[in-house]
Image (cartoon, rainbow, N blue to C red; front, side, top):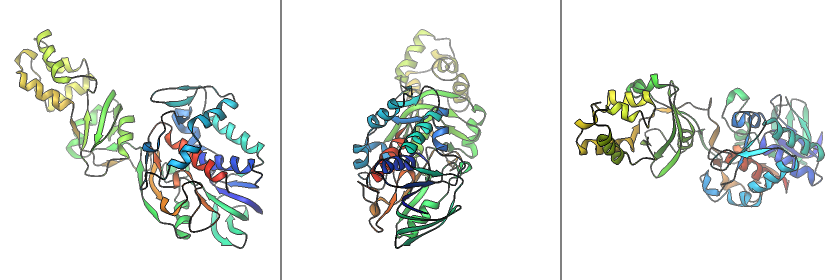
Amino acid sequence: MKVDVLIIGAGAAGLMCAIAAGQRGRRVLVVDHANKVGKKILMSGGGRCNFTNLGVTPASYLSANPHFAKSALARYTPSDFIALVEKHRIAYHEKELGQLFCDDSSKQIVRMLLDECQQAGVRIETSCGVERVRRSQEGFSVITARGEVHAESLVVASGGLSIPSMGASGLGYDIARQHGHAVLPVRAGLVPLTLSGKHQEHYQDLAGVALPAVEASVGKRSFRAGMLFTHRGISGPAILQISSYWHAGDDLRIDLLPDQEAAAWLSAQRVARPAAELKNVLADVLPKRLAQRLCELWFESRPMRQYREAELANIGAQLHDWPMVASGTEGYRTAEVTLGGVDTDGLSSSTMQSKLVPGLFFIGEVVDVTGWLGGYNFQWAWASGQAAGEVV
């Protein structure tokens, strides 16, 4: 088979690239080893797809080159994708922090992309793995499960290593290395953190206890959102966000009461409720089981009138700067994204084309650009896919 553009990966970036290329009259074939397209889209946002974020800026992305994402993000914005969603009459809402979700189902986003592909004459083959890629006179010769494909341009949109149960693989990194590209070290991002030893023992039986708002910090980076205790450690949006910045051995701190001036509040409680025990006072602003555990292990629980001002000030300070000694992450099994990937130094920031091999493109998660939690990674997929699709 001969095509103008072969795209490996029928996820968000690959489909977006296919649409843009097909609309330019290019003959486009998309292949994916999975049995259906857009699996990550389908599972996103609890099945409602957090398809973008109104607050997208280049600062919301991690990359060895923080400037690389600027061009694509500036040329295809959240407003552009929202216009596409509205064109297909998909109802959506803003949940929080600029996050946009479908009112109904993530299936609507996949259907929208497939409809656009169909209108653009794009051909899609699922259950079609790639066995070999090599340069040819036409551009590229790719052996797939359905036979050999010759293409002028090859777009690698194969994603990262996160959620291997959905078929994630390192194919894109292999293709990059084969063609002389550097691949920066990869690791799990937007992932729960694990505790071990006594640190796990302290919190293990709190699994399921949630705090609606904490501020998690590593160094100068902090995120404010919810936190959840798990059987193996800690999770929730604040932890997933900070996990992308955390490395083994880093000092992780949690402000358990970001909305309170804890010392002043405790002092006021001593006056208002002198007979109340500390654990019961803390249970007014923290989950009861967590309040009890803090008092069992770190704060001696006494009637409030028995605390000196300095003791309450010390307790308040600790509540705002609680140490969590993480031992690792849950890994790719539950990670939402893969940090690292194809080194952006080898790619054009405006087209995603290889600087080493004409006609070879890398887009989406396989590239060393990783967004925050909350629709940022989808926006990178749409933007990088559009950037490549305009020129392939």
